[in-house]
Image 1 (cartoon, rainbow, N blue to C red):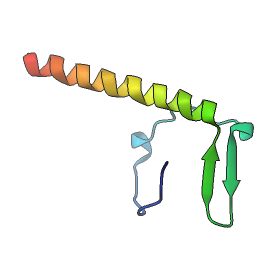
Image 2 (cartoon, rainbow, N blue to C red):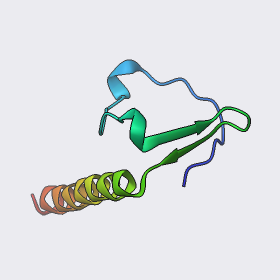
Image 3 (cartoon, rainbow, N blue to C red):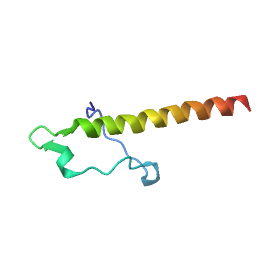
Length: 66
């Protein structure tokens, strides 16, 4: 789902933890650096991101009307 594209510096205040990950839901392959997440965890994260996107769209619309 995600692929490394480049390095970047990020200020700690710009980081947000969406969900702590349990070891049983993550598989890391050190040979190629791939990380796999369990399907149920991916579905949960997608719901979180979809809700955040809906909130952001709603927030932008209400600000534009003011």
